[in-house]
Amino acid sequence: MIIPTKIYFRVWLALLLLLVLTWGLAQVDMGRFNPIAALTIAVLKMLLVILFFMHVRYNKPITWIFVAAGFVWLAIMIDLTLSDYLTRNAVPPTLHHTWQHGAWPAPSKEGP
Image 1 (cartoon, rainbow, N blue to C red):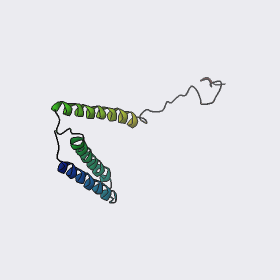
Image 2: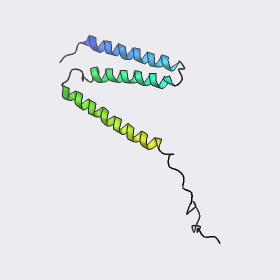
Image 3: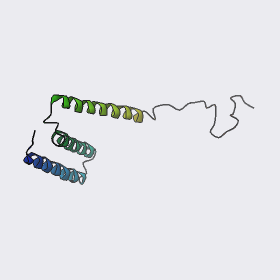
């Protein structure tokens, strides 16, 4: 399928406008909403690139399935990474150390 150049030009202009919007919002302090706004704009830009420049919009439904599978896999990887990272300090420290770093021989539990 041949896509008119006019569509590519409009998508390119939309990407440029979103770029300017990203820069403009980065100059404004919106508190904790800055990352939300930046990620929303990034998702919009990603969708434009995937749909038009990668021709997913004009392809068969099997292409949509594989694109969706890629995003499911990305979500799984992000979930596993965050579950590891966010639980790093959740393990309580041990109360009784049977060894000390650099001590040799290891101190015994019994007194002198």
